Length: 468
Image 1: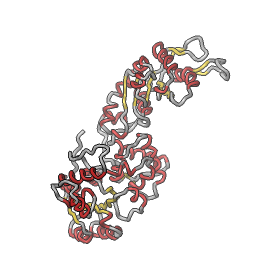
Image 2: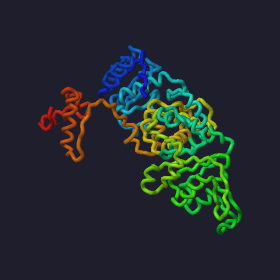
Image 3: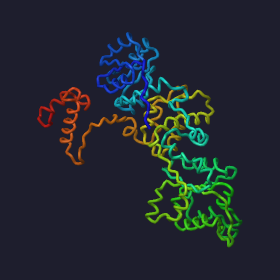
Image 4: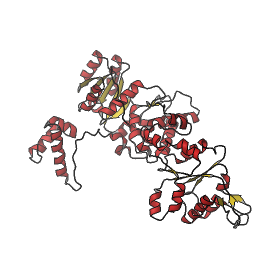
């Protein structure tokens, strides 16, 4: 899905840095803004005094220890300016105290397009819609009471859900752990003609193999030691409603045979019973396994697979539906505040926070995101009006320095393939040579891109090891 270009018309950006931010400046002007660039703090303050500045991007290394003084002087001439501080390491930023007047920290490798998108979001959003999203799609609106989404990936996955719900046929929901399979199953039940009946959920992977048969089918009095009374199983409990069999891929093979017979005959035998009991429950199954592979490996019966997989739904992982991350974050954050008895308006997410969260892998998917936002809401300092990366990073379980904040540059088509096993000296020479070609032989730009000193580059080239 093609995204609209950012609209930065009428905005002015001041970049204060000793390193090259050509991509940011060029992108900002490409989308209608004006850019002022300087490597000198005094020149930057003079520019902010003479020009109306909306955004300041200041490199922390260029500003040095005078961050607070620099911010104060910028704000004295442009009180409404948003001041971003570029840092090399987000963990260092998370451990520091946010200087008064700063809008947010940004990673020093942020791309021009991402910066432009963040800037547009900051200047054009409504307070609660801090994701910049609107819900206009009829399908999204209809399903919104049950779960939250906005992405095209989820829209494709759930496009036929209302029709599936109404049909009454068996549904097989697949997807990684934490993608929301049970929530989708509950929404199918609510939208179906069985909505007035019970919704009964069973986790087939959480019940010991020796107990799951009795859990599903029930037992007769005296069927085994301790069976002091007749007990109905989940199939009977779900009569006129929906039975949700979660993690169906973990069901033992012997029980799969019985389940297949139940689906074909519409009857169950309680453990220890001689006469069948008719059942009337719709089956929705879910799995985080690749059931086709389980069938090939003999771990799941193919006849049962096809009996369950009449109407399939596959839920994409959160990393494949990044458009939903800001929307879900705001939703979970607001819900957590509400549960704690906190009244709105609630803090919104800073652009850098949104960028951080969109690039985080979320291996636990929506469940992990919900837990993180609950922690943030619980531990956020009082009177905080904006959630910054420093509020998020401590609650992320993965090594954040190797994931989100690296903010890899936009693909440009340029690159180099270095085979595994290439000696370090040769790999270094290859990178320098390719970067020189990229800059047209400009050594200064090459050194800036490689983040090495110009003397170091010259010394390497003078050794005659690297082709120019």
